[in-house]
Length: 243
Image 1: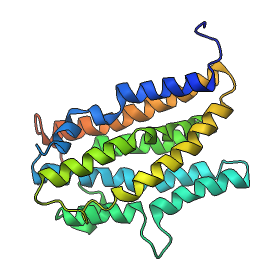
Image 2 (image 1 turned 90 degrees about the horizontal axis):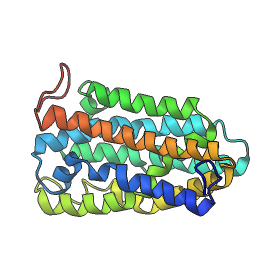
Image 3 (image 1 turned 30 degrees about the vertical axis):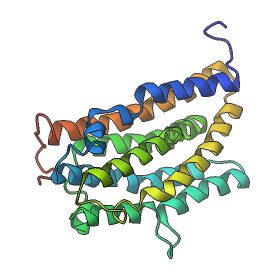
């Protein structure tokens, strides 16, 4: 097959999964330390605090994508993601469950939500993701969500590793992750089918692949910043969380 020939849907999926195998942030040294119990409690606090901004921004990202979907069926599907993260006013969503994780780590909730201790690189990376979804093509916006293809593995490893390794972690603290084991595969099934169906030219298929690379790089960059600030050389910038 020539480099500019249209990929079959199966070949496109294979290439997407290859991107995850090479670039997904489960491979990052900071995650290896987190999952293996090699971080201190303050370092885990820094991770949870910074990750909160990513979690809290997902509904804004999804709302901007929802507004661009052309059919009721597509909008209903994507609206479910908003409910998963924002809750329904009775049952808490993912953002609230992440705050429970921060509570369990001893972080003051008001401080977490204020974003005062956020690393600048976290803010820049998350804002870039929200902007990407808002401004790029609908196909690229949907494709950028496909890091969820790889999340069940990282969730299972994270939960088991942290429960085993940290005496300040318990199942209630990590309650955020349990629903994601079923939500993420459902999200992936829809998004993967969408991009395989809607990427009708090789140029559009390359856009899909590029969107997933972008999202993987964005997640990796957030961990680069955490590692630099709180592990080695351990230089948090002015204004950032200092345990």
